[in-house]
Image (cartoon, rainbow, N blue to C red; front, side, top):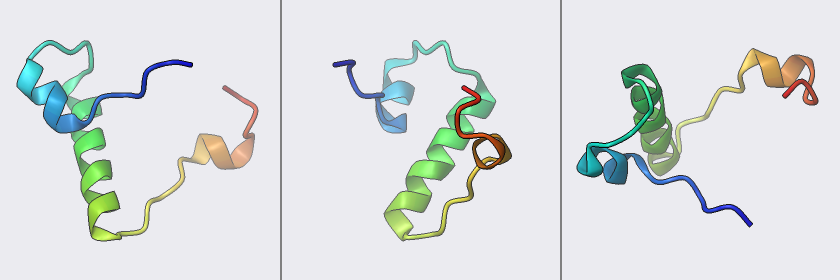
Length: 53
């Protein structure tokens, strides 16, 4: 079983991540949205074909 991804706060405290600034910003917004109850939007790639990974 793989390890779960680290939260945004841990990634920023470690200062050693291979993620881009845009990816980190998206993760931060997603985590804040989960905490506030704001509805999340599904990416178009997942809606068109769920097996296109």
